[in-house]
Image (cartoon, rainbow, N blue to C red):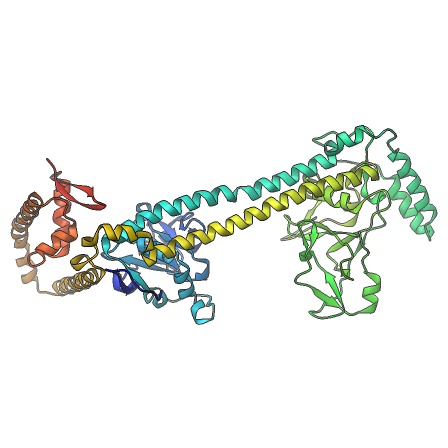
Length: 579
């Protein structure tokens, strides 16, 4: 983030304000919560579905110890921004080595967490700012990220404001996210009304002489059989037209002047598409199952052929309905209408259905995409290892609630009107969702530029300057980290000392107890003289006598003894003596 920083702010790296985390291998009989990358809800930015596992069954990546206040940043596909703030629920649990675990030191964890959600952070560790999107980031990419650091008091104010504003954004987003499912349900309701006759009940009541559909079907059957070019074809067609209907148990009634009819009686004999291998370039597109989307043809991601015989044999005519006969169990049976947009043929996993004059392609398409049509496909599909199949015979046995062609036309017209309305609403929702998603980044940008807390800084100049500035904070963090490192080194050396020295050290607790009592008395005296001091304020005044660790220990003791309590005064949380 290259920008002019507000007064009291400093540029810093993540590594300047964090400490290195620990790694360990779980004991074989240890039961723990394991957080892997799949446990993160990328939309809500929180740990959502962790696993409860035993050490003996833990993956080799289960090594990183996490604590409350840590921030998890996925190094795999960082552009997806799988980040989360560790809550108390997951304190001292174990995360995957696929995360960079940021352990904030001396600063507000929520501020750093919000920072990891920003576009600048995402772009930086994804390599976008260098012009290349890397599949995985490195620990150094995260730790080396340069960001604007406000004073500690302002960090907390920013974090509080972001908690409030982003919660409102999430609430709006949540309400918008349910609408696509409602629109999907609305479309299915429209189709259900269409094939049950409810959609055109008023129109039908105005028709004085409704066509006799049964007579029309019989006439069509007689003419089709008579005009057959071969005896074998006549035999095949006779069998089709004499096949009795076996409809599903309908959960709706159809009008008395409709009939139930197998679609094989209403279409030319079905045919499968080409099995020849297609090419990335050629004269004519070859439509495949991936080109059938939501009842329509998607003309992207095409393959081609230049084989004249294939083009002649598998050419399509406007109005042909394409049925996906082989696909996953969820997608088998999807359809689309070829409207003659451009010359094309169709691939082997598709069945071509060419309708007679008794059936409109659009009505057939809507019927197959209705819940009734989808349920039929679910019941008749043959399941393999990973794919399901519905052959031409099963497709032909689909029993269609059939109105007159005139009513089919009216149904198609009304469905298209209602779908157009739903599509407009969906487009508006998609635009609103885009604006909401952009709003999150806009709020974060204002937060990290200081704009969000401009008025607060003007009202609290003493909390962002001098010893309270970000520069002073960085120096304090640096000093305390050095002290911690020295203490760790000292402890490590103590373990290697002689037994005599170790024995001598056992007399130390009495001295320590005395010192602790004195320290508590000093802090109580300070709070009696000036109320509302923070832990940082206390440490600054006792820096020559106590380490930061000792200050926090004594404050914890005083809290446990119910001698002091936390209170928020002018936006700053500090300690006061209890009366």
